[in-house]
Length: 114
Image (cartoon, rainbow, N blue to C red):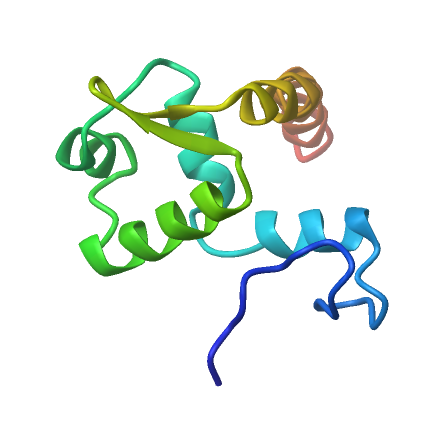
């Protein structure tokens, strides 16, 4: 089965009408989509640099995700390499607070398991 790019307004996983939030969740649930956004927040990267940042993701999968993220205008290509677009930066700023929450959650689970 070939996966299509989850465009708002088109049928996506979880929504026949393609509600924007469902299109976003479909995209972010794909292997390495969120990881690429996360890793590009630390700065632009050429393909091989990004591949290293993403724990040696396969070049095929990285290429696929980069095409999707570029089509959805979350990343752009500049002379310095791939980087987050304005929309990508805004998305990262929404996601970033989850890092703090997840650290607190992990600590709570650790303490409860003692």
